[in-house]
Image 1: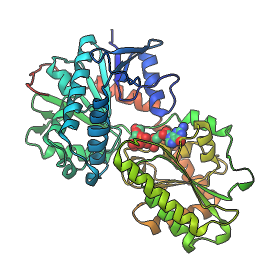
Image 2 (image 1 turned 45 degrees about the horizontal axis):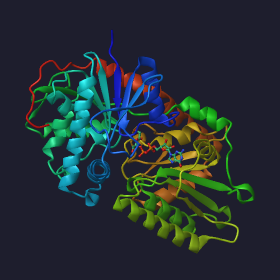
Image 3 (image 1 turned 180 degrees about the vertical axis):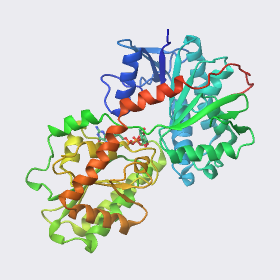
Image 4 (image 1 turned 45 degrees about the vertical axis):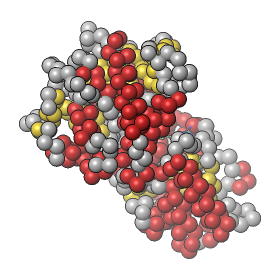
Length: 460
Ligand code: GDG
């Protein structure tokens, strides 16, 4: 009999799951049974030596606890001030402190011990994201031979950026503990192969797997998607705007976590460029940017917030009229159904990351469109989504004129071309839907070369 599926992710949903990834993992656990392990939202520091039940129906949710110092060092520190900027090509923002790495390793090791204690021989572990890179090598060092898969939701780092890590050689070794490393795009896989190729400890086998010291790891791309059917359904009956009498004639929408990887200053400046003379002043386009607050305790996030306030103030000061505010910068999260309604209402979806694993907003924008009168997606070529979404207008967000030109083109695009591009994009969104992603990943993990022998290591 097949064992349980054990999902590990930093965030664990409480209450009803919402959002693509959380719903997909929830469905996978419903179908197979199992356990979801994540960081406890309860700030209590007691009981760090065990997993806590967050609910047991219809599958187990278990949480590990963090001390305040660990939260600061493992989560805000090593994960979000070291690994996140390294993977998003912002090594200038990396903040290296010895306690960050020490607590990152300590939290992973404690979690490995807690998981190992409860593991059945047939259980399959699926680890998500950069918070847990060393978890598999630590589990292996405890004697665990179960299949362990990893999925990296963010871009695979450039090989030269890896050198910024406190111990760059760890990265390849940590990954080699997994049977399967899933990445978002083919370009990410190419970067991972480049890292292994440059590492004398790694050897490529004839079947395409990588032998790294005693381990064999498969690396492949699994572009993540959304529950397209659900979003198409919500969009068809959604309220399409809060605007009332001030309903803009031409609506350009952006919706991102407020993160420096999302290219928001570039988006605002490109919009300013559009207003600066590329467009008929009577058209009065509005850029509605919803920016949900994120990681506000990290200095780089405070800086980007101030920068965006300054740029939006400048653009609005220059172009606003009594009855028109061109840039609406909404620094809060909005209700999901309302957001999908706004996407359907918009003529243009403007997605401008400078680096992004996939970017689900791009896929949600497409799924939310009215097939009879669809809006146009303007998409950064640096989003993983751009690898397959050839129906979008692809731009380089560093090139403000190119972005402004693409938005202008999108606003003027005839219906026939809009429909044609939309149909192309929708096909990609449906083909990569989240249920397909989960099934493909787990099937591939099940077929990976099993870990047979173990050579425990002194330090993970
Ligand atoms: C990481 C990777 C990868 C945004 N604002 C609101 C809101 N959202 C929702 C969107 C979307 C989600 O948040 C954001 O997903 P993204 O994929 O765009 O970006 P990250 O959060 O950076 O996610 C990314 C992803 O993991 C999955 O692998 O694609 O590359 O960075 O679902 O709709 N939702 C609500 N209100 C908001 O104001 N309700």
